[in-house]
Length: 621
Image (cartoon, rainbow, N blue to C red; front, side, top):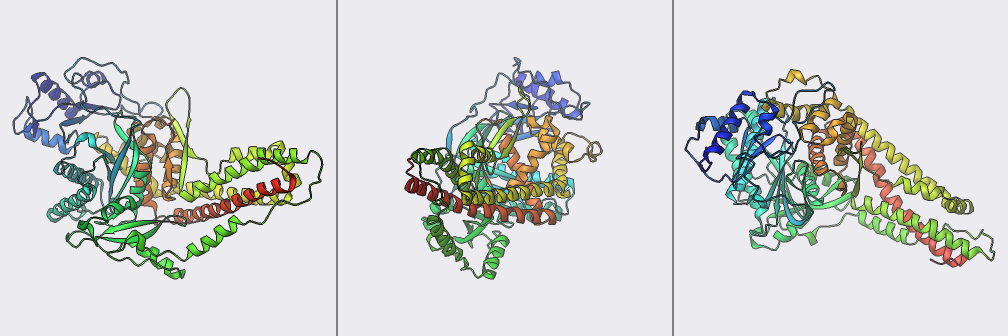
């Protein structure tokens, strides 16, 4: 398994690199002189297209196969091969991973002379199809060696699938998640069901592998979630193509509802496939709760043509139905030919309708106690423009975020001029809230209308309670031994390839191991241990709550997708397996749900108050 169109100089350089990698005997200068000057620790060879049974200088087929198996060589369809070099030096005095020399000097060598045929794009919107899969029970009763073997097999199965479907390199992105992969297909319209075909081929190849696997710890299942969305291409910190948007989060959320060897799809995919004869009666429709009380439609692919396809209802969705039945709701009964229009609605929608009607006709908070003076219309107009109206807009924004389960992430530079950022969600926009309530106009208005002051104080207390519950959730995640174990497993899989013995890091605490893992992912925040740990814990909490995140434009490229991917895997391990975290999650969800309903009611009351101010005191907008 070698490359037959390398020039003699290219072959010589390739041999030098591989021999150095095999022995570990090389300097930073050696690596820098033979790679395109990037700081990610990868040597890329571009423009290599031929693969034959020949032997290039100094290397046998066995040599290359061994190096491939050990992770030094990754063969990618479309003619690219990458050789992994060590990305880190030893620990420095502060126990931080240091980057290989980051100078951007481009040396004139056979490698640097070869260019990328498809440079990464940034900021371009693209119609993306997502196939998100992960390994079910990845760490359960498996040693590190078995986990590493399974990851290798999955990578091989996915690569072979993409090769069989003739997907060009520039039309797909692989996003590894540790124990899974997200495949993003870019602007591929034909065949219309390419995502389903890829999922089925993966399960078919996996079935073939499991049939021949000798060891039970090497057999495994995957669950698959599929969705589609128009998202945005970005260039990540590794100068590689990546993608950002709601689509990948939704595909992950759909996948999390599935059991082993099951395929679930979202509305965007189902609404295309349902009109095709090929997929008539091929789906069961379900409704699922992906956050507090928010529901979404998902569809299980249940074709009887594939004996290895699991077509029993997903456990998580069965549990949802049983729970709704216990509540006396009008439950969803899946049927093979159910369509989006045929989904029965939960009885709670009637209550929601009544609530909406109540919100639209709130009790007035405005009294007639204010004395009528000649300047009252001018003062009332100031109340309206500088306090009530902006406060109603703020409440509307809060309600929209919680209702749509989509939140804007903010980015703050940790220590300028570094490129390390910390990220977080300001759920309640407290700075703006406090600014309005403590303003001169706000304080004067509230002193005149104590009923408004009372309801705002009550809502402020609910925000405090929700913040406190979210803090408890983060604390339970941080203290969970499953979090440390998951991160240690990620680190160990990488260190096996680097020949670093476990004894060098097995006593690391959560802060240290988080720093190492994020450092391996090239995140600049890894240089700030406390912030690295806090950010990861926050993202795990976001993932457990099923939040969709809008990435800030001023973030470091690649940070957010990487944090989301790692957090998603950790959340899958924690969900239902850690009692303290489950309890905190339920409490936080309950308070978030309360904020959603209360903000809607309060927004309606403030809108009514604006009308009353106009009617009673002659104010103008």
